[in-house]
Length: 108
Length: 415
Ligand code: HEM
Ligand code: FES
Image (cartoon, rainbow over all chains, first blue to last red; front, side, top):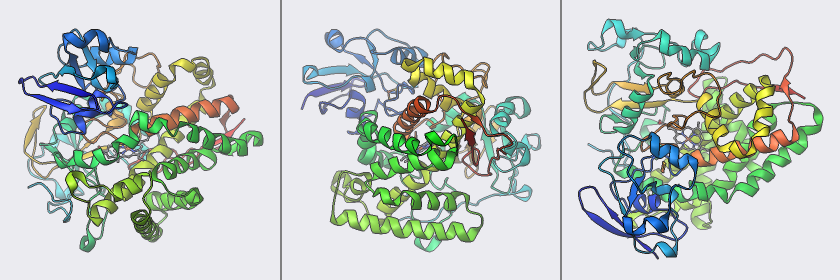
């Protein structure tokens, strides 16, 4: 199973196996990680699953895939950083094995 | 102390109802009797009433009524705050649905606060996720088409009976892993339970549902399958199988949370469509914008409320709330907050995207929201394909029934 490293704002990091076909938000929730809330369950409506994709992975992961995602990121509280994505919109693939994402201090 | 879901006990704090039970910390000037959700002014036009609340009521006020006294939150930002701070606004004991105190159980996951809450959601979230429900798309579409085959040529129908109830019940049975031949019985039980004519018929419906669910759980124990009931029955988070009370409380809550809400949502929306033929044409002309259209319709026609209990004293907008007070987030009113949704009653499919509260926010955000969105989307596509022009039947009486799920009782249509 591909692995994702989630790095909290405090620096604490967690390496998690995330199923292909799952997304980066569920990977965190199903493993009780702090830092990603994913309130709406992936409807692109809550923006409580924001993460910053590590610079080394940014090109592979890509930019927001829909204008809904873009609008949700823009409307969210807190700073909109480059490479920020809704983690519920990053689908796991074998290509993304080793992905590193950074979590904001707070999701709201 | 956090509750122990395997050993449920009824909540211990008082339930306050009526003008004689207003605690002394409530300032006189904040006491109101709104009549939500049973009063005449409310039932005359519930959504208009809730939109007007921003002029007619203070942003936080103490509502007094026979249903129970509670602080009401109508501002989008206040609801977001309350719903995201469970350490102040708890769900433990916040669901007023009556139960036998001698055989008590919790409604799961709604009555469970973090951190235990996530354990339950993780059991079934994969089935209810956007990807999970998409597996049902073909089936939902087929069920919608079958229902439309029965009515399309008739030129009229009572929407609720012909489509608005059977569709969501069929889909519910599919995802739960229960047989379709229970459809009409489930519809009947759901109506009797949530809108029974009297206590007796409500009690009888509850007994039938309880007996059926217990039997279904026993059967899934013996014969596991891919459905939600089986998944819950066989769940063992961290290696610990759920207790019988947890399994029962989870399955029965899906019945209570997952049917009437969808009925009411569809009723509200189809009534609006029938009265706005030009907007129907607009929807037909914008097939690629259907997700945004569904989202805006859910905002405009939200049907329910989020109740919480104050777990720690807190002050908001200068209002002191004390442990044991109840609060209600009036979700439809929050969706009409003009500071967030200008011109709130206008249905505008091009609004900038903001968090809508139809499914609430916070950890208890509706588990069925992706299923509900998909049902609504397919219902719109299939209905409008077959019946693109329709109207409310002449002289039809549109009546809203009192209760915590807001929608017209019936919607007679002609085409
Ligand atoms: C348009 C239809 C629906 C609406 C408007 C709706 C609305 C809501 C709302 C407002 C809540 C939060 C309640 C609170 O904060 O106290 C909620 C929770 C919930 N809903 Fe829905 N719902 C709908 C459909 C469904 C369906 C189809 C299901 C399942 C089959 C479902 C299952 C649940 C569950 C399990 C919860 C509790 C979640 C938790 O506590 O974590 N809902 N729903
Ligand atoms: S989980 Fe809500 S936007 Fe990603």
